[in-house]
Amino acid sequence: MLRYLTAGESHGKALVVILEGIPAGVPVKEEEINRQLARRQRGYGRGARMKIEQDRVEVLSGIRAGKTLGSPIAMKIDNKDWAHWSKIMDVAQDDEGQTKVVHHPRPGHADLAGGMKYDHHDLRNILERASARETAARVAAGGVARIFLEEFDIKVVGHVINIGGAVTGVQRPSSKEIVKKSEESPVRCIDPEAEKKMIARIDEAKKNGDSLGGVFEIIVEGVPVGLGSHVQWDRRLDGRLAQAVMSIQAIKGVEIGNGFTSANLFGSEVHDEIFYKKGQGYYRKTNNAGGLEGGISNGMPLVLRAAMKPLSTLIRPLQSVHIITKEIHLATVERTDVTAVPAAAVIGENVVALTLAEIFLEKFGGDSLKEVRRNYEGYLEQTEKF
Ligand code: EPS
Image (cartoon, rainbow, N blue to C red; front, side):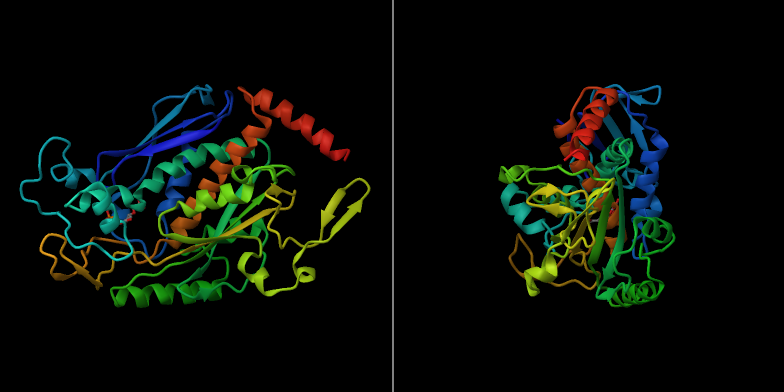
């Protein structure tokens, strides 16, 4: 069983994550995890915080001499900004000046619902954990998961296809094209025309003290037939991927394959016809299903998209209420990003990797990489004969 838990507040000392269930013998380099962390920090439209942080992972357990031990992998990412917040976020002392107390909940944020639920009258006690800073810890865990998946030639890539209505014109790009072009784009978009429009939209939002959301796409190649199952609701691959991606802060919609578009079409226009060639096996000419049928991976690349709402901290704030006096008040303004869709694409890749690794291990599980590989190869041999 692969599982993980994160802890940490946005302006606390550090973020931590414990990842358990990665088999022994997987070669893991800290540098590779750090590369994922750095990718998550980039993106046009990010705010001042990203100039302060340079996320680096410190592996505390579970890896020795460059290989996983099979024991829990504990990792820590320090918050550099802690230096400015140590008094405010102190474990024992009350912040005497109360300089950063939050009483005006931001529409769209967890502030009000969280405050009411946990009976916190300083809404900072909610927003510190609700912050998307937490995703750095998930990406660290995802960094290990994708190294594990790559042992089986499963590769996860992502790119931005829409920011604030500026949409890419490139349809169904290959993974190679995505990797090559998105890393160089400040908005992680592979279409230079759309990139220009996205940047203009971000500039416009910034000028107006506003924020923007968008859509990113994740593609996974090398997924074998048979991950997930039709037999029970909580074993369906689509449902489990959607939960992982939907749980990323600010995500409001997830679709697989043609998703919402297929609702407008006839079945004959949607379903991917099945062909067979000796030596090659079964194949499809289209992939409208996004690599999934009946909650089971079908051997085609997995295609998933997610919609991110505009960030809820607005420099020109919306109306809210003072939670103590109940008087009308503008929402709290915290330092923020204008948009974080490029970062969300990286987070999406990494949570998808975690979910796929989890389901892969459910099917081919073993305590060492060698054992998992043996199980996997035996299964491939069986399906090739089908
Ligand atoms: C965030 C607000 C900003 C973002 C932060 C998420 O942080 P701050 O309030 O410190 O300026 O930069 O994202 C990160 C710190 C990160 O690592 O992604 C929020 O309110 O969610």
